[in-house]
Image (cartoon, rainbow, N blue to C red):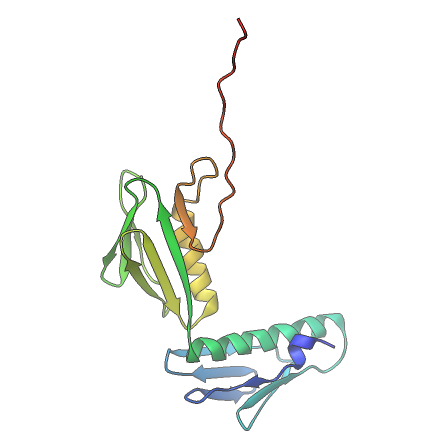
Length: 182
C-alpha cells in the first residue's frame, strides 16, 4: 500500500474544506484553492480529517493515491501557512527593484526585465539582491521562481546569475595559461 496515500490529513483551524465529488475547494487566511482530482479516488472529509481511498491495487491507481493525497495536503498547507521561495542575485551591478506588484530585474542585459506575479503570488524585493516569492499554491510559487531564475541562470565559471538562496553552484575551473617550456 502507499504509505503517503494512507496518511490522513488534519485540517487546521481557520481552514474550510469543501468536497464536491471530485472537486475540492480549500479556503484559508492566505487564499483559496480549487482543484479537480482523479475521479477514481474517494475523498472523505470527517471531523476535520481528510482521507483518500483507492478502488483497487492496480499500479496506476496506487500512483494516483499518493499523488492525490499530496496535492490535497499542499492545498491545506498553502491556504493555512503559504509557501515561499527566496532567490539571490549575484553579480556586479545585478539588482532588483519593486515596481507595483511586479519586479524590475537588472542582470547585465541592455534593458531591464519586468516580472509580473503568477496567480495569487506576491513578489517582494528584499534589498537590492534578494527576491522573495510567496503564495498559497506550491505549484505557482515554484513556477514563478523557475521563470525568474531562467532570466539569468547561474554561470558555473563565474558564479554570476540568479540562484535559489539555498542552492550551491558547483564551480568549474576555467582555462589556464599553457607554458611553452622554452
